[in-house]
Length: 539
Figure 1 (cartoon, rainbow, N blue to C red):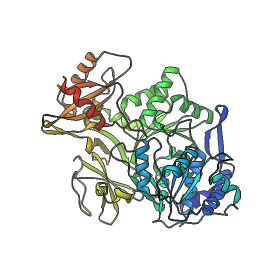
Figure 2 (cartoon, rainbow, N blue to C red):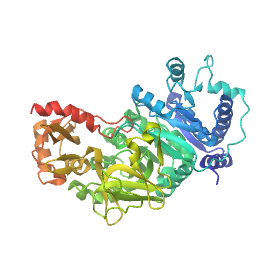
Figure 3 (cartoon, rainbow, N blue to C red):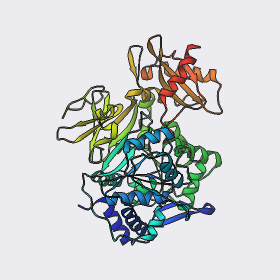
Figure 4 (cartoon, helix red, strand yellow):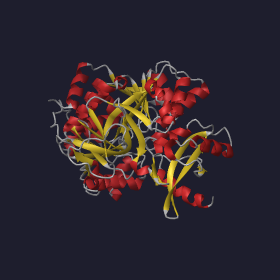
């Protein structure tokens, strides 16, 4: 069977004039990379990388913020049988350095500054034997990809790769622990493309995507992807105006983004009265979609269907639910029963396993309604981690099913209902074992969404006097009731016992809850608990 990349490039040659990538250009306009341009650039890139010594099986770190270079280099490397290594550019530099050390790349393709740092201080790993500057000026003294492209004869094509060969290594965001290198095989990439096409048809429409992999994900899905103006070092901080600009100037039908970005867009459109007439779908990734955000979207963009998509770097997408079904389940969520993530997409199996202990090969899932750890299997579930994570504590997330398939334990708590829908209760690592019970974040925090003055709320456990004490930390809306009224509203909402938190739980106020760098939506609860500890002692 042909590999995904050779299939994609073959399709590109049959429809050469179609645009596969739109990207910010000068004067507020968006440049266009046609499929013919992409194929030509990929062929010259493959020849240049081959001249530089990149071979099948090599791992190649790609460190560039240029959307065209990122897309072309990633797709070309996959097609050559080399594995691009992607590390989140928003991570702190010491963390990025550890990720690259774990990846141990054979080569690094980096922007001039990264290339210079690599040559002087070994940035990217001192074992790197090949370094090429990407986007370097003409007079750049060292080896550059552009210079090699001009010196070689473009290749005529790429070769099919074995299904079980490593195609891509993507590091997790580090939102729920140290970033880990997730290994994806060539067969998995084809399955991912199929899952998006069959399970999320809006993903194949002209799309704006405010995250780094958008550039290469679009071509692999066969759609036109628009990258808005954003700093890849701070992707969660993209301005709402940049999203609006990208949609209006390109006529995009679908927008991909985290709940934080969706909320930022909705607030902007509501405040300015901006309409987005071509937009029909929003795909929300990275965290659960709060009902308050959904309400704002429906208020200012009434013709848009919002899809909340669940998955992980190790398996994406897993499930999806649109806002019509989500709204019908709101009473259950507000009553403290968790957040519905929808049904598994085609080709994905989700079961619930006993938490905190191995289930054993072929172990059946827990009965419907029983809370445990969500576990996923399917053709595009990553089989392994890279480097130290492959044999460390993270390796326990991988088990084998009855037929030898990889079962990925997500670390998420939840249950399945009688209709096969997944209900999310929160991360197992974030549960608070206190007052003789287990408290789950996604059974408590949504209860507070309707409290006037609450923008976001977080349940954390703080160690005091030898026990874990539940604490609610609230980020207020900029305008609204004062702290005393908000605190009273929080306790009244919890008084009914929803989520199991006692009504007299301490309520602290934080000016802006700390969140992850990639999505801007996952709360850094460990950091928040450390912040809360000394303040709790002063109460």
